[in-house]
Amino acid sequence: MKRFSRSAPSKRLKRKIFVAAEGEVTEREYVQILRDMGCDELHFVQPRRCKSSPGHVLLRMQEALKKDPLLLKEDGAWLLVDRDTWEESHMKRLFTWEKQDPRHHVVISNPCIELWLLLHFEDGAGATNAEICQARLKKVLPDYEDKHLSACSLTKEMIRSAAARAERLCKGKSWKDPGFTSFHRFIQALDIFSSSGRG
Image 1: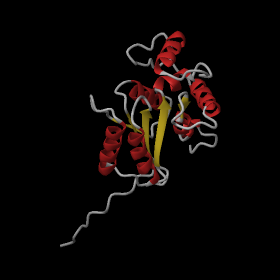
Image 2: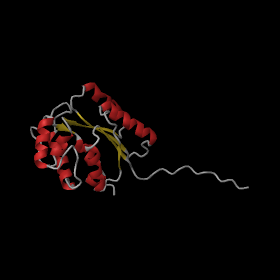
Image 3: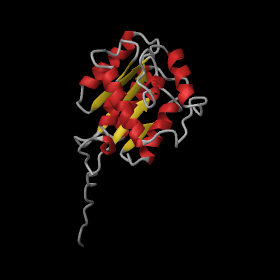
C-alpha cells in the first residue's frame, strides 16, 4: 500500500504588520481606516478593557506573536502608546523589547494620540498637553466624539501631510518632550504610503 506523507505547510508570501495599542477605540478605528485605504497587511491586536499600561500593550503583542510569529523579514510588530503620565520605567521595557528584533517598533505620542490626529490638519505647534490637543482637534474634527473616528474623516493625502508634519515637529526632540510623536515612522513603513512601495 502506498503511503502518503503530509507536506509541511507552505510559508506565507505576504507580510504581516501587527499593531498593539493602549486605546480600545481611536487606534483600532485608525488602523481600520488604513486597512480600508489598502493596508491589508495590518492586523490589530485587540486591547483588553482596563489594561492599557505600556506593559500590558507589550504583553498582548508578545502573546499575539506566540500564536502567529514573525516569519518574513518584511513583517513587523508595532506598539502604539501615549506618554501620558506613565513612569519612564514603563517605557524602557518597550525599548528593551524593540532592541530584540529589527522588526519590533515602538511609537510614542507625547502627550497623547490626539497630537498625531491634530497633525492631519495643522502643524501642532504648542500642542504640549492633552487638553490643548483635544480642544484644537475638536475645532478641526467636530465628529471626533468619545474618541471615535469617522471613516470619511481622513484621506491618504491628509495622512501623508501628518507624517511630514510629525517629522518636522519632532526633529531634535525625544519621546520625553511634550509635543512629540513618532507615529510618522509607522505610516512610512506601510506599503501604500512608502515612496517606493512593494506592490
